[in-house]
Amino acid sequence: MNQMYGTSFRAYGIDRVIADIEGMYQRGVRHILIVDDNITLDVPRLGDICDAIAALKRRDLQFVIQASSAGIARDPTLPRRMAAAGITQVFLGIENGDEHNLALTKKGKIVGVTQTAVPRLIDEGIIVAGGLITGFPDDDAAAIRRNYEYFHAMGIHTVLDQIITPYPNTEMRQELLAAGLVTNPYDYQWYTGYWPQARTRHLSSRRLLFERWKAKREIIGVWRADGEFQRNYPGYSWLWNHVMRPLILANERRMTWMYGEKGRFKRQMNQWARLNDFFGDMVVDESFFDPDADGAEGIGDPAASPGFGAPPRKDDGREAAFISTRELYWSKQVASRTARTMPEAPAVGLDSV
Image (cartoon, rainbow, N blue to C red; front, side, top):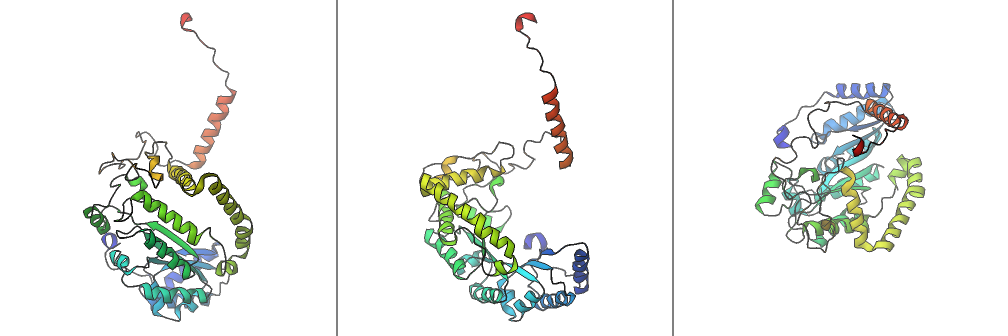
């Protein structure tokens, strides 16, 4: 963030913010995501924005925001004012429950303020989504489990977890490279936050992926809409809890019975790895999804170089820069119908040429 934007930011006046919100409301918008991860750097301003939104008296207008635990904990009146403004969900970048790991991400000592912020939000009926990062250099299986238990014990409704990723030109990348922990340095198509690009001092990349999957599965489990979710989204919560969730749980039990825990893991990882294989050219050694195998050290193409993937994959330079999906759909329909209605050409033998 600092390298991209610097260490300062500019804020619109509150009147401008409210005018934007009112303009969206008049156009039929009822749910607004405020994508501003600096919103709690100026807590008094956020409080004033909440009061101004509440004064609009738009009872059917709901907001989702990003915030910091420190910002929420700084003012005990803030969660109440947020709820009055219609803020129903807050994403907190909690990241980790270990102070040493938090220091590596330059988050500071926020464990205490997180334990203050989360209950305050929940007490006001606000849904809390927490960001969790695993795979730090000193993480072992027990450390990974402790973090999921930490999030679960606080009553966080949704855990948005990812594995630490050595994104290009970041300090974290330089530190992991210097420590010899990066296992996929250049195949950036795997840099999604889900797949491990590095190992820890205790776990290989493949073992890290498995231990994270196992811990989340056993501690967090299949998500359930309860508490604040049920109050804010009763229809969706009922559908999820009584229809979708039982189906998912039944399928998980069936797959585990058929293939065992590690077999289920391997099948699921293979399936998820192919989700973004749009061109059929993804390089992946499936032994990576066996936590006990002696296969590839890292996920991705080991032949990838620093410039790997820079040009668009499979692009021959003749494709249009922008393609209408509607036009693309109808062109395919026409081509398909044409192929079905055209008479088949007669076979020609070599002897008759």
